[in-house]
Amino acid sequence: MKSYPDRAVVIRTWPLGESDRIVSLFTREHGKLRAVAKGVRGAKSRMSGLIQPTSEIDVLLYRGRELDVIQQATLVSSHLARIGVDPGQFGAALEWLETIDNLTLDRHPDPVVYELMNRGLRLLHDEPTPSLLGALLMRLLDIEGYAPNLSRCGQCGATGPFTGFDFASSAPRCQGCGGESITPEILGKTASVLAHRVSEVLADENVGTGRDFEAFAIRLVKEVVGRGLRSTGVIATLLEHPSVETQGY
Image (cartoon, rainbow, N blue to C red; front, side):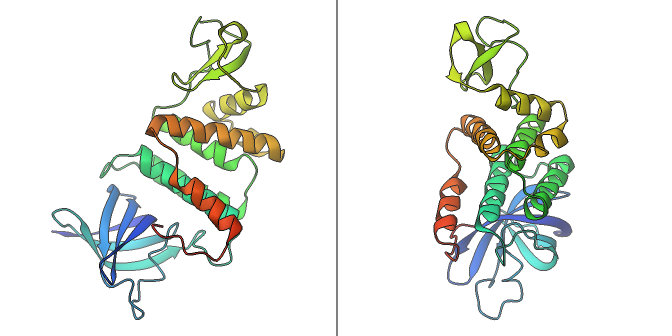
């Protein structure tokens, strides 16, 4: 049977022709895939309000040769889908989804990532904390096998203390081996996430430390995917112009 049901989160969308959209979905049973939502850009489309980034939907898909086709969609949760949401929260959600898009394989079912993705979206909406996005990104890097090894200096093998970090090898550096400067707080937060003590990280309300940890996690992601996150620029645009249309999302 070529038609199949699934539950999915909308990662992003692209215009296609005059009335359609290509939709990137992360599904619970079939992993990440792309599908066409036909007529969704039309004024009378019943799906236009559902096919929005961060929305979770029950969807009926038709298996195509290159792209699947969305035949039906029902809203499960809107998560942070723009309406009445702080631009910073929505921007963080886009960054979270883009990282999942970059680090996961097409049509590779991964229920652990699916649940983490949804939990992250809920927390970004309901309980945002300064270290939340950094913790989510670090947890995803760990699940996908890209987490840094913090046990030894990546150059000489010393067990610490560490004062630097080498992003190319994703390993800390002791004082004698250099590297880019890193604080004990960032290393501590990273170690806590990798040891599954995420609640300790989220309990820290220090905004400056949280932002530094987030920047560190984003830099690690950038090294893995080989380029910067597109959504980083989207965040800046949203903060300056909250009502702007985010094309490509």
